[in-house]
Image 1 (cartoon, rainbow, N blue to C red):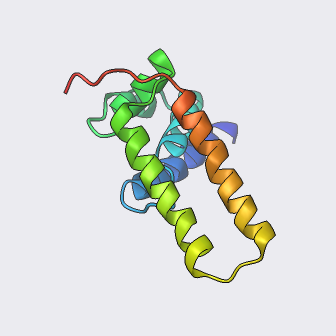
Image 2 (cartoon, one colour):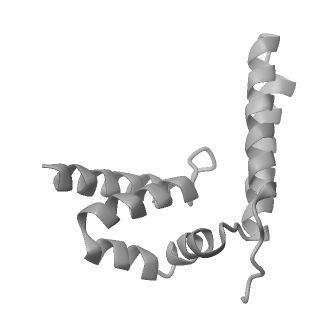
Image 3 (cartoon, helix red, strand yellow):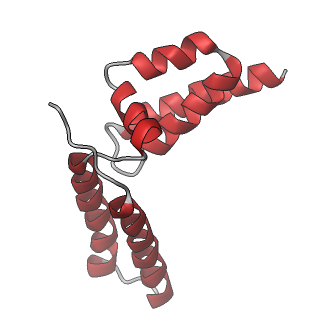
Length: 123
């Protein structure tokens, strides 16, 4: 039963990570890392496939080997987060506490994101 739960969690996380490639509000990397962890506990074959995947493999390998996030990924994530939090703050009438929570959350994520090492891309 435990293996099945990890397998379902892995597939669900993988699906959410794949959506994150196209939807700016859905983060890709954390869901891929969760999928890899779930697959490591449920299916060695799926775990290996995920690490060898052309699209997802490099993200996981950079994180696992170096704890790194590529500079291009950092820039894209930063611009998207800044845009997503700036719009409601600038153009919607929200309570100040909500605006501060949104800005603070994004600031915290950006600090974490930019504190991670960058592995130079060989591409």
